[in-house]
Amino acid sequence: GQRSLLEKDGVADFGSLDERAEELQGQGRTVMYVAVGGRLAGLVAVFVLAARIQPYREDGVAQRMATHQQLGLPECSFVTATGLPCPSCGLTTSFALTVRADLANAARANWVGLLLAMFCLTLIPWGVASAVVGRALGVPSLERGILVVITVLFVLLLVRWAFVLWWREG
Image (cartoon, rainbow, N blue to C red; front, side):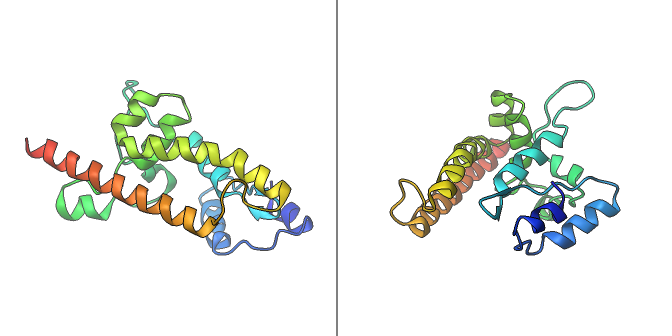
């Protein structure tokens, strides 16, 4: 909902989102905040944004990357500087295709993005359930769990990137 509604319900931690919200509103876009248990629910917002991105060209063919530019973000600086895709190229497109259940094209855009999107989808109900009971369900150490997830994601992105670069050369 609107920021004022969340403030009325006691959500006060908006961090750096205010600046981005004002920027988007200045572009004529609608900003929607989502909160669960008094915290901004970033994962839900990610999927809402992904649903607003158009991952298909006018001829209906799925794009592989650069859909993040529809969010007002610049072209990937790594691609601009090197002409090569970066490790995360295609992540946004992969999420946009995943929310449309186009899993084959999501995997083509970035298969790590597809895995991450599916993982994040499972985190939403887990996060709600954890918020309801007031603790991280099934995770003895949330910090360790986050570290493991980030490490695995980083390794998978690098493996995928190495394959993409090798495939381009071959």
